[in-house]
Image 1: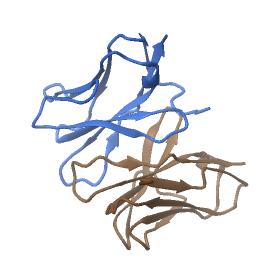
Image 2: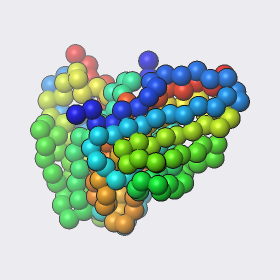
Image 3: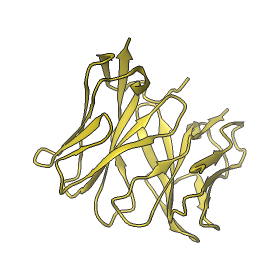
Image 4: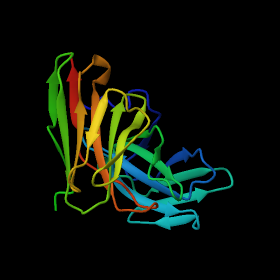
Length: 112
Length: 113
């Protein structure tokens, strides 16, 4: 099995409930943010992104909220399903940088 | 459309051996990246490339070399493998310019004995 994230914070939710995963980012100059999902044995998969000129963006069952004042990002998953069980990473980037800065991740466990 | 493909998927090496990990992308991306992922440490950037023939060091470059001879391929080499290089290695690529998501392969699981 996947050994990544042995000491990750874990969020456990009941199937069908909404999930909120939080991320504090580090650089006040960051202007682009991404959420990734990583399932066991797989690479990170792009979920949704948001630019700093927005404070909310919605996708299919997912919403990302950005609070630049306190440098906080959150991912909301509606009607959480067993297939949502994974490790979720936030990442940040600032204009002119080639590189993403990744958070350490949160493990989401969905109880049936 | 395969996206980002990494080979091999698994490998076991003895200390001191050398090997090359291959990353191939079919999305015509300009930028490519190599990361390693260790338990509790998230993704750490080893090397990256912003175009064919160019490479640059990331956060943890020591013990690794890279080459980008073709736009679609990015190779990661371990010259003399050490147990500390036991990790899962991910390749990613993205289009030129900031504010673009990186797309990842499914990783190479490397064990150094």
